[in-house]
Image (cartoon, rainbow, N blue to C red; front, side, top):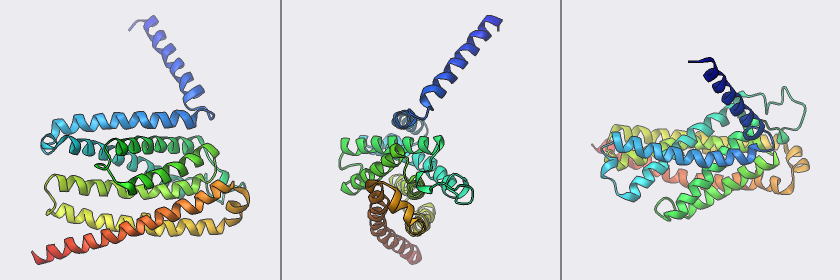
Length: 276
């Protein structure tokens, strides 16, 4: 490759770096660029799911149009869940960003470029998924999904744009770790594998993941809020204060209702296996 060509490539590379650092990852623009990027990535994942499944899945090609849409849409939610739950686990349990040991400032006001970027991408997903739900309502989810996504989206958006309570937002987002198992259950059922051992094992994993991530972890979150009650009540805006208590409480009630259905489903499946 000639020297002028190398210089041209390096020039484009530096221009791209400048664009990313000055605009896409600049603090004032992160909330907006990350949300738009999240929406765009949802479209990319949707198209990739369609392309890969259409080429390699015998089940996919015989599905109805609405089933294919749900198949691809669940692919989006699975990718988002894997990403945001891993990032949430990192911030809550591994990162020093929200640790009381290394910081003297208020935990309810801590944030970083990465934490804001992750929340923005997640908002992009919630917007895209809500759009899909409304577009094909009620095929992709009923009223409970609209309430869940709306509450989650509003809480995450407030945390992103205000910078308040990002720790508690990430604590709640850890619950997304149950989404891949829920989606796998649907995939196995759609593929006619409801009586398989994989379906039973996945059901047990749903039960355990739901218990830890959507029941016990919510209790831990409220305990953490209790320990930092003065920061939450005295320093956060009233809307943020209401979200810290109201959204997890509402989602927690929904989680308990869904958990009851999961327990009954696991009992029913195991009873059938024992009869066989």
